[in-house]
Length: 143
Image 1 (cartoon, rainbow, N blue to C red):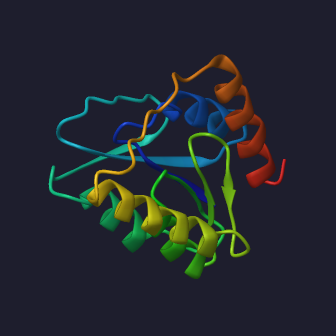
Image 2 (cartoon, rainbow, N blue to C red; image 1 turned 180 degrees about the horizontal axis):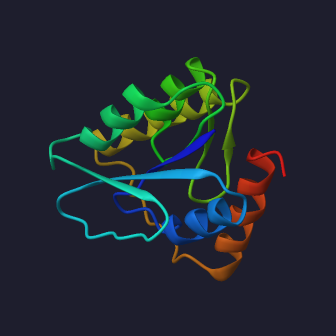
């Protein structure tokens, strides 16, 4: 089992690495050249800045029972098809039971954004968000 982190803009890299280290699980942090991330435990892979470069790397490497930490539902859908497990930075465990509705919601939101009828305003991340992510990552790991 490995944990792949889609690290471009991911606020839970350090928490993921800490939990993985405590349980002896290999971690691969995938980021583009625009981000500076270092880890004494995890393997850090740097990809091109091109659109979806980190996503393609993860999709090509992920295997059955690996875990993917990503906000990208498209990446999650492909990872699920490879029998990997997926979790978002907010602790949502993505499964075969909820991926279709998540992808449909993403599609509808994109249509609204394209017609200038929807504006996403993300709330500031809280300590509770981090605690929820850590709790759910342990569930995803089966711990």
